[in-house]
Length: 467
Image 1 (cartoon, helix red, strand yellow):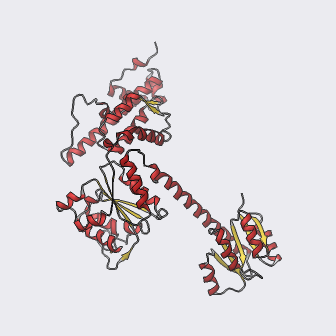
Image 2 (cartoon, rainbow, N blue to C red):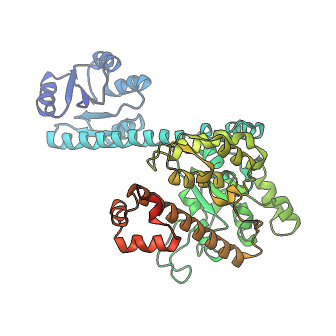
Image 3 (tube, rainbow, N blue to C red):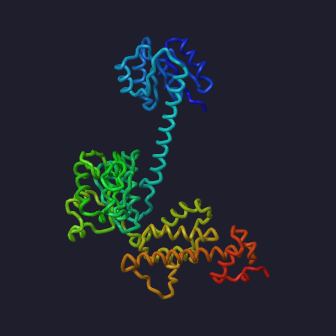
């Protein structure tokens, strides 16, 4: 459908010139004055209005004010033979997108129209994207009927449109960032950036530069000035995840931002002002950290204006069926799976498990089960071993230090890899009816690679041959 442009000019000759030149690309409507133009704007779906400034009866400036009362986003271009700096400034203040002098050069006008329509398309795309983000991250996407979760959603609605600092508390994997995003996209800052920084994931010697930015030459390697996350989040929301891990020398600088909305870049001397809404999160008890001297008490009290505690999954197990349905619906299309339900035994196992990794662990377990499930129903055998209790008598160990954590994570990744590879080989042999070459071709492998995996996992091809 062609964009519909309304030309308003008291000279019939000018109306005709616009019709002849613009009609091949646009649907052109014309009007000889303000009252008629208002009627057209009310009854037709106008994309753009181009109006003369000086007209008998109603001026172009009066027309645009009247139009913007009921079409505030309609782009309007003013054209006039009496251009002055004052009239141009006044027109821009009233919401005109551009200003052009007569006599009109149609090639310039066409460029101006296309530029205006491009900006209009970009504005509409941005608005659609904001709506899509709100639909993805809004409070309606926080799943749960447990009273504690209902309280979380209630608090999000209550604080979203304020500028109050929020502290989100909860164990790892409970969804603290999801709550922070919901607050942002429910707020009047939703069209501005939501910027995340994980204070535990960035080395302390780099965290200051990431947060505050730096000036050129501030340190070795600072070859140019760089804006930090605080500047990137200006007029938006800055989410400080795991703030309990922030070094104390940076805590005092964040305190100044909270109190004055000012900071200095690393190596800088001048203050930079920002308008940030800060949301912090921690899986630590910050009050205990204050008592232990690991966290500043003044920052804690400044952050602890509004606290949103998120319960661990083990304390709201009645929400597990809802979460299971949510995650299956979320991921099955991406993995091209038809899984739409879980067996009673599977659901019972999920309800009985303690979920030390909370909702994140549940989602990861379901994604893995979804990938491996051969039917439309998740069965117990599709779940990871640690959920099925098939640790062969071993008690689940908790790592004692950082090195043991790294080793155990590596071992867990290897077990998952081997489990997936074994099921992959079994399914390929089933499809190829035990014929190694046919099975290898079906899954895009060469015969030797496929045979090596069969030997690795001790799978017998004979179990898949038709008698």
